[in-house]
Amino acid sequence: LAKTTQPISMDSYEGQEVNITCSHNNIATNDYITWYQQFPSQGPRFIIQGYKTKVTNEVASLFIPADRKSSTLSLPRVSLSDTAVYYCLVGGRRGSTLGRLYFGRGTQLTVWP
Amino acid sequence: EAGVTQFPSHSVIEKGQTVTLRCDPISGHDNLYWYRRVMGKEIKFLLHFVKESKQDESGMPNNRFLAERTGGTYSTLKVQPAELEDSGVYFCASSQGIGPYTEAFFGQGTRLTVV
Image 1 (cartoon, each protein chain N blue to C red):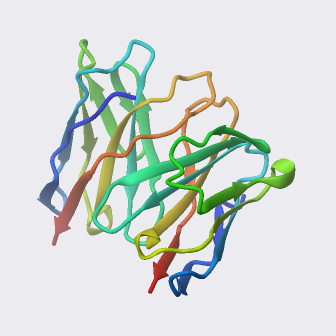
Image 2: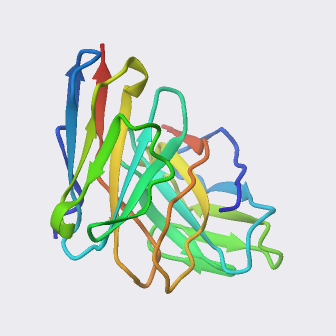
């Protein structure tokens, strides 16, 4: 799977929009981009997945430019409970069995009151 | 629907002892994975079962680790004998064979401390 690079940490205040950008220069044609969230003492949890352009669900939006070498996770109006580590992963071809996941260091997002 | 369940949540053992971790995947998920995070490091893949077969065990650190998934349901990960560097959090995850998203559902992890 392609290696990813993301900021180690980010800070925000409640109510703000947070954008976390991930670079994945070596992404393969069939790879999808997936973001996971992890709270302390819990396992990672799937947030959103996309292939190109924009994907939105009830939790977040994912923006992927045409060259797919980067992606941006957007969290609207964050709250204190959004404080967590966010991981960007690439791989996982839709329609096929999920293989191993490669977790980088992730981005520690801290939301302040 | 129950999620991925891991037992125990914490385990403290002495160096040289044996520990067995258990994972119950989401019902119907053929794929089961073990990952671990040792102190200060990234979450690392250990192995992947498809039903009862080992699909990929390239992440297993050494032969002190033995994973089984008899009957293709729950899985166990045994560490024998445990060493200090085995301390960390062991995560289990499961996924559908093929689904709308290729996502893995993770358990809460087992925190293993070897003293």
